Image 1 (cartoon, rainbow, N blue to C red):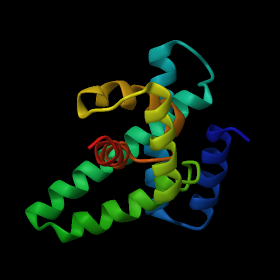
Image 2: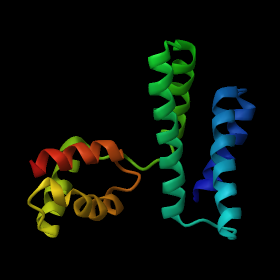
Image 3: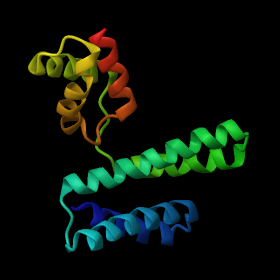
Image 4: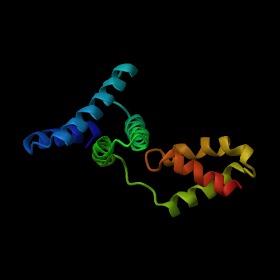
Length: 148
């Protein structure tokens, strides 16, 4: 089942169950997918593009979460936590820190990086491997740890 089919089924279910928050988030994600399809001039998006869009949605919410938390807006923080939990349902299973650390070590060995100056090379090699399965800032942190 494609992501769009899952979203449509979940949207129908959310309507039946009168889950306004879930319905709203699903509609936002669907709109993002449809906008990207229009932008690319295609009817169906590849799984890779869908993952990119979902990751972007999660990142936007996490960035907003941080800002609202700093501003002391607990009402908006709670709302964003709910939205994040819904969007994350559609992402693939996230890698554990141990799995991610292992992938970072392997990639550093593959690339032959020895210093932080080569961090860009390592990140460029790692990100396609963990796309949608790990947060970029967490990957960055592990790469820095292993290169120092």
